[in-house]
Amino acid sequence: MTDPAPNVRLTDDLAMPLVGFGTWQLTASDAYDSTRVALDAGCRLIDTATMYRNEADVGRAIKDSRVPREELFVTTKLPPELRNRVRATIEESLRLLDLDHVDLWLIHWPPHGTAGVDTWREFLDVRDAGLATTVGVSNYELSQIDQLVEATGEAPAVNQISWSPRRFDQAVLEGHRKRGVVLEGYSPLKKTNLHDPTLVDIANAHGVTPAQVVLRWHVEHQTPVIPRSSKPERVVSNLDLFGFALTDDEVERIDAMGT
Image 1: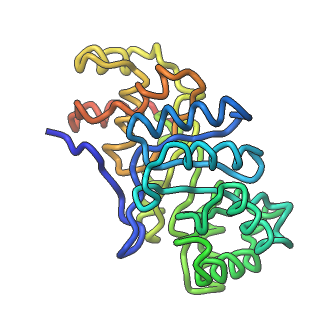
Image 2 (image 1 turned 180 degrees about the vertical axis):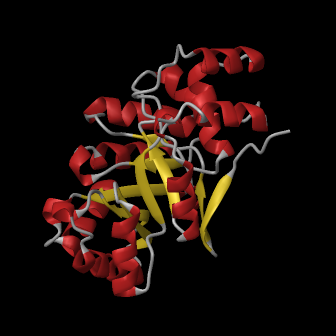
């Protein structure tokens, strides 16, 4: 039997769902409608960002869904070009989302390719002020995470990066775990060949789709994943991952697809 609502622990009092809904490239009605579909299907992790320009639509979907706030895990992100407007940016995100805090706030990209230590210090201040329950980064190298830790003594709770079978790297995964940082994957299906014989074979064995196999593979590795779709049936299918589990051998076969 599989766990119907698995989480990964970020802090002693904060758990992050392993499967969520990403809203990149969704605008206006698509962002609203797809977020509502995801929430109605039981999704509780919703991911957006300032640069997506859809925080207001996502926030309206959250409000209209009537899902209790304490059940939700909401993520948004600071674009690096706004690194000099950290507090103002999170306050604007909260206004658009119509929330008093987000669960996770990320530095969307390393500012100008640097670790952004000053920005990270301000993120810690925002967390301590209660505007974000916890904070992290996105698209960071492990060496850049190390710079943040060396400067402040605090590691990001999460590093959200592009992750899929094709990008699998055991050393990267273990490097995050060694540092106490949760690796969260985005674009899990974008560059995945869903006709790959390995995925098709495993999907047929479980009576699911290759896309569901890829997403379940993330779950087996305890890496949160945020697939995105504007098609209601795919939104629902991408969340329907807990009626089956992959065997250790199947996970290893998918791992081997990494370049």
